[in-house]
Length: 174
Image 1 (cartoon, one colour):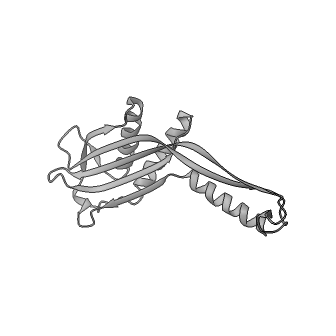
Image 2 (image 1 turned 90 degrees about the horizontal axis):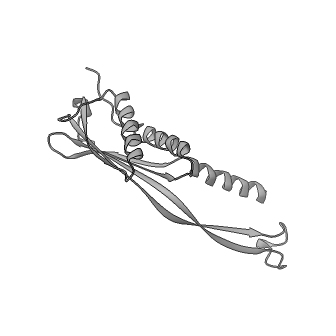
Image 3 (image 1 turned 30 degrees about the vertical axis):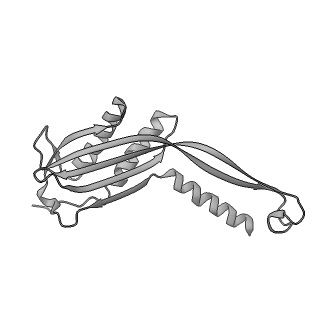
C-alpha cells in the first residue's frame, strides 16, 4: 500500500513537470469583439532566435482567434517578454528497507538525504493592450523547465502559448 501511494505521488509530481505552469487574466469589462487587428510593440527575449519563435507562436494563436496582424496602428498592441533563470530544486529521498518501522529509524536500517538540483526555468509573459487607450486588456504567463534540446524547447513554447490562449476571450460573430 505504501509503495502504491509513493508511486502515485511520484507520477503526479512528474506529470506536473511535463506541462508548463500557465496563468492568464484579462479585463472582464472589455468587449473583445471590437478587436480585429493587432500590431507588435516588441519582443524582449534576449536571443534573436527566441524572438522569432515567440512572435510566430503568438501570431498563430491570435490568427486562430480571428485577429489579423498589421504593421502598426492595430486595434490592440502585443508585447512579449521571455527570460531564463536558474532555480534550485531540493530533492529529498530515503533509502532503507520497507516495513522496518516508520521510516526505518527504529532499527537504523535507512538513511535520509537531500540533493540540490539546479534547474533552468524559462518564463514568458505576453501582454495585450488596447491600441487607443494603451490599457492592459490581457496578460498570459507561462513558465517551464528549459531542456538542453532546442527542439524540445520549441515544443514547450508552442504548447505554453497554446495553453495561454485557450481561455482567451472569444470574438463574437458579426
